[in-house]
Length: 350
Image 1: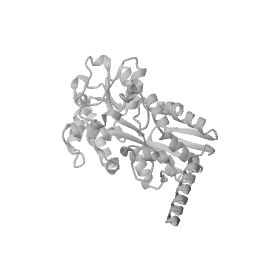
Image 2: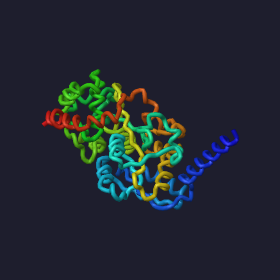
Image 3: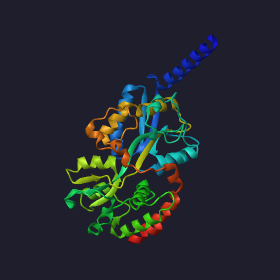
Image 4: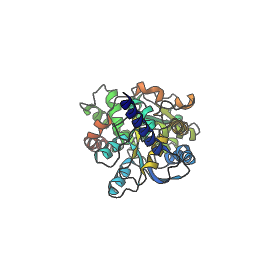
């Protein structure tokens, strides 16, 4: 019994030592984080990166910005033999591809203790990078064109707004998300067929001014070029504040899809200890709350203390309105659905 107790004590001490090493404030060096450009970059640097570097003064975080998850994946593939990135934040469907292609490293609670606190929906694939933010698909609208706020996804088929809509198509996951939401609106089981959804979206297509909004749907709707669009809640809430009351945000009564961004350790990272320390901090209640307050992404750590005002503008309190969507399964349908968008939906608008 004494021998067993001694072994248990030794194992526990070793575990503590490993955790302490991964999270020690003495960790040092430089790491490169690859994540989204634009507003995401600005807010993430202020809310997460700067406080991390204040807590870990011997670590420098360099931010490499990219405008799309697919571009980040392409960079990881090209650098597979000599990684120049240590940590990457991109959408869940892309991270699942990265896991499968052996581009991302496994993580555990010894390396990243805050993994133990995350909500179940944040564990995307056991042992790999978890969710770092939750977002959801919304319909955005110009308030000047809508005396009464819309409540249903069906507004996208209202001929009164034909030619004044900016709808993002696939390969963006905004497109696959809209496909799933349209199926739900039609009471179709998208896991068996999206035939009805495709036909319905093709009916919408002639009313779409652009399926590839540039600079983005938020700007086009705010300046009145379009009056309806699709987007992500976090960015929509941010731009709503910047729009002087012009931009409205609607979570459709038919439901929405949960968009997940994951945070991942790149396999072959040149500074894994500092990278793990950063990942752990990014998942901490402190960092999660700060980024939610800054940009309205729902926190993945339930210990995050978020103000009621900010929480009300995230999907955190409305998870009952999210449609069940297995992103690992959806990734297997990506090529098929992309072709449906190109050949049946977008072409119907020409």
